[in-house]
Length: 252
Image (cartoon, rainbow, N blue to C red; front, top):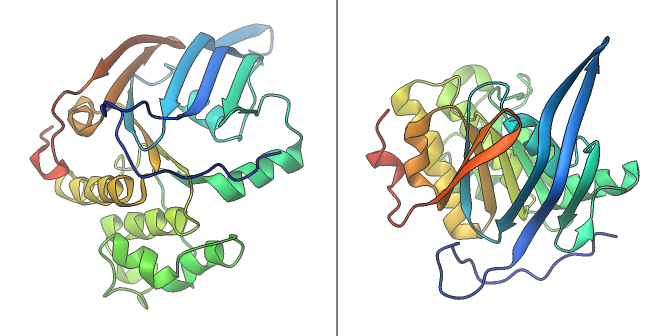
């Protein structure tokens, strides 16, 4: 299971050629039980995500964005429905198979950086490259996010935005096919947040990595190929940006 898909030349969702579907989500629901109360996090949700596209998931807290992201990343399973990654079904995969899927194909970025304080930027990234199959070097990954001059600095010697970019470098160093980002700018100020978004956009463009960014900040949506809005566990709107803005042009 999870044989390496053939990687094609990066393309965007708006290309006239037909992009490959990376994820197919069909009629998934997710229900949590809290005592005698059932919480419906996702309700019969359908979605396709395409090779190399940049997607922003918008919606208020509790709309199901993080639940969807966790299911896509193999961190959680739906209560019902089916999820496919490159035509291979995740829904009934064994734990070992999901671990292999996450390790080989998915990079995760969260609001908090989760760097190890006693390790340098290079060493934090090397934690991933040492277990990946065909990684880039830590130096190459850090240079890609604009930190080539900070290789041997510790997290305490770096700003919040720099630490988040180390986290991005760590996520991309294994050359994942998919990058899943949960509020990656949520703990950052406006200018620092834009630097992080620039790093994500560069990774998407240069590596062709399908990138999904969760945010409640509607201003970020202008840099996406597609904007998917969620509310109460459902997709309420899907919009294609005919003209994308560069992160430096965003306002919020």
